[in-house]
Length: 310
Image (cartoon, helix red, strand yellow):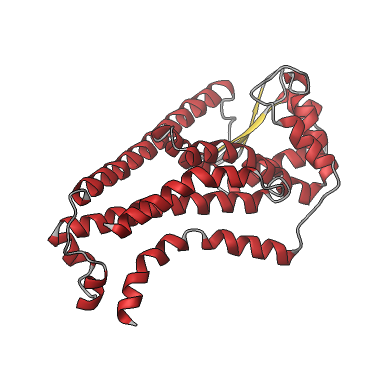
């Protein structure tokens, strides 16, 4: 049981320590896409630790599982893992982790079902507020709503739609409107909705795990920064910042009171500040370091087998 326990300890340390270390990074706002990749690698490492620990614990507890997992392995490899000495907690650990996996899947299914229900409701509302014109097919991607408040959003799905209000069309002109469209298209192209669903499912299923709660909070912030960068690369940082200001100035987000859109001032300030980009070499090093995070539990599992073969 030493190796499954070591994997559980590694996963627990990563879940507790990683959010604190990642919060100290001063480059995440400058490179949101890299920060998104970093967070996904950390969460993947935690989940991988649990999966591998569950597999090895089940192999220790039950001969049938051991036969399937180590069927092609030489006898020396099986002996190196000391699987024949089943500890009293092997079966309990495997069952507990399996229940956690089932619970995670259930939370993800629940989140997807809720998202689809919300999407259907919003599509029905859109159809009621903006009926299709003669000759307009269901594949139309643009929906214009009558509204006094400037607003725009991307509605994902099998037939994605870009929804914009008439107030936004009156206020945003030329390249500012193009930047807004590019921002929402950035969300769609990167499939940010799936990142938000997965992070919400993990945080909802395991609210006491720090890495999952931080993962959800950071996803909501970083996907907006990444979409801002996609728009600014095409239409300029100043144009994108002005579009954000025009779209949100009536919501009170630039005042002292807190609102659900309280991150907008920071996004505008970031766009107006002089860009401070990483060099390609440094970005590559950070990407490689993030990609190695999920490899650590895999190496930990294979060390006994490699020693036996050596």
